[in-house]
Image 1 (cartoon, rainbow, N blue to C red):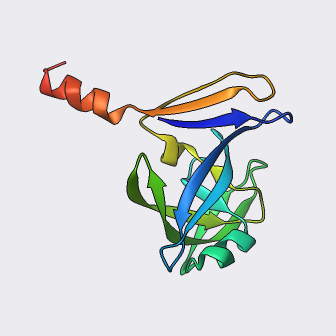
Image 2 (image 1 turned 135 degrees about the horizontal axis):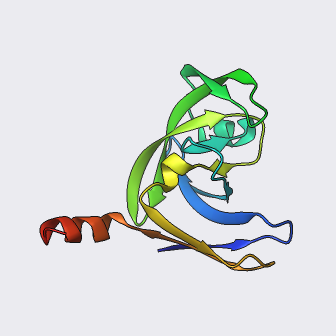
Length: 134
């Protein structure tokens, strides 16, 4: 399980640890964004700090409906005690965790300032049900 909190400005935040190219750990606060369908979104300052190679371009749609070109790359995240390579998009915004990253997790939060945010993986539950024929 991973824990976070709700800010006074009503944003559910989660601190996630990413590895830079030298394997050094950087813990970054991400806003959980269920409207963002990708994995991670980082502004340029974090991309530079982590040394992420943004070697591809992708077309994306903003919440306004506008289509834009977005630089993409990959970064290693420590998630549930394991390394996980994920796709990262670069956009001048706050760091966001999207639905592709959060898929197969249960997310609960208390919608008050300093409210608890909890994220629990569901994959173990699914594997147990599959083995039991459920």
